[in-house]
Amino acid sequence: MDAIRDFFTYVGNQLSSVELTDIIDIVIVAFFLYYLFKFVRDRRAGKLALGVLVLMLMLVVSNWLQMRVTNYILERVVDVGFIALIIVFQPELRSMLEKMGGESIKGIKSRFDRTSSEGFRPKLAELCYAAENLSASKTGALIVFERGTKLGDVIRTGTVIDAEISAFLVGNIFFNKAPLHDGALIVRNERLYAAGCFLPLSTNPDIVKDLGTRHRAGIGMSENSDAVVLIVSEETGVISVAVDGVLKRGFSKKTLEAYLSDLLIDEQKSKPSARFRFFNRKRDDKPEE
Image 1 (cartoon, one colour):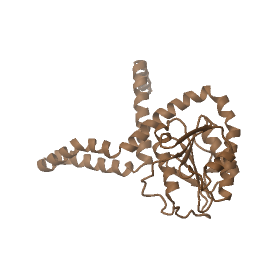
Image 2 (cartoon, one colour; image 1 turned 135 degrees about the vertical axis):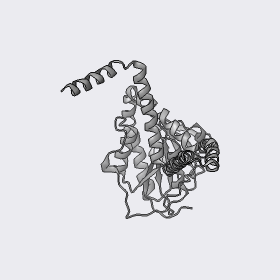
Image 3 (cartoon, one colour; image 1 turned 180 degrees about the vertical axis):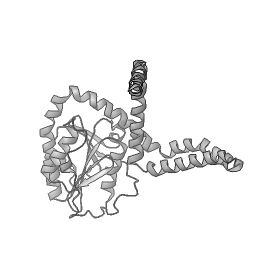
Image 4 (cartoon, helix red, strand yellow; image 1 turned 45 degrees about the vertical axis):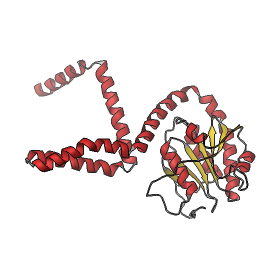
């Protein structure tokens, strides 16, 4: 009993010595480790992190065994290695920092913007109706929903239209004889803001080879920002959505509207409902021109 009493007395003394700066320090470190874990888990940095750990282990062992030449080489590698990692993973690091800021701002903004978000629901239904029509006619389309990360650089590559959302206008923009049909349509502030925009292509080697340029552009945009990208295949009419570098395919109008509502309107749901996490393997996209 004395040992247990001494233990709780020790714990109480330690907790009583905790100050506000200690709590802030813990929160900052936890925040940093959380985003570092997400960065390593969701990207090819996972294998790289394992390689860095092996390298550091070799450095410790070579120092312990007094292997001077090996230790010298490893020390020089480590000196320049971290700078090289920053250069190699510059796009991924930029994406991670943008999402860190975007998610923080989005969490604050959602507290004051609930009415506006609910007002977007009928406009979202109009866009889903447009996607259904484009799918039925096998007309290719690429629609980007801007969220926390501003897409000014992408918008400058296209033409600003700043129009009310209309299924007929979306259909006219992506009509295969229209001048803006090849680029992406950007939705900003619940309006069709710009069309004919060029998106960065994904360089992920694990993407299915059958996917064409339109799908790679949609995935690339979702990798480089927190945007939600709606894609309609020109070859098969399959409706897809890319979020955080992950492509989900085989949506109908009903499931598309529910999925996009989870992502764009229901801010309290940070992740889409499990019932919409599916991959339709019955229909495969062919490479697009």
